[in-house]
Image (tube, rainbow, N blue to C red):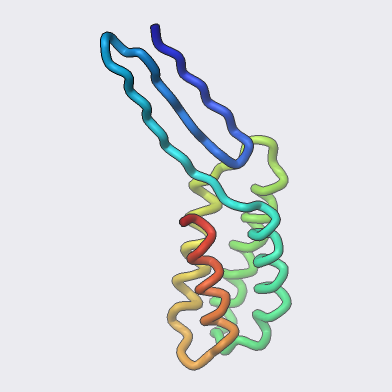
Length: 114
């Protein structure tokens, strides 16, 4: 007997139980805290003007933040798109040296998918 359960409320989890004579549990979890992510998006949007970025980098970050916000509103979220967008924002901000704001944001973004 095999049972597969997939639930998607910001968490994807799949289990297979009793395959043959062995029990196998497979976990593939991709989760994030939506409230924390939305809070970070707001914080980044409010502080982006104080970070020394090229204008194109600011525009890119604004677009990525809007994409993440739009994705969070969907019933079926594309967690990979969200994660990729977060990583791109993080990569742009990692290139900034001497900015405590950027360093703090990078740190918080890094904690989201641990």
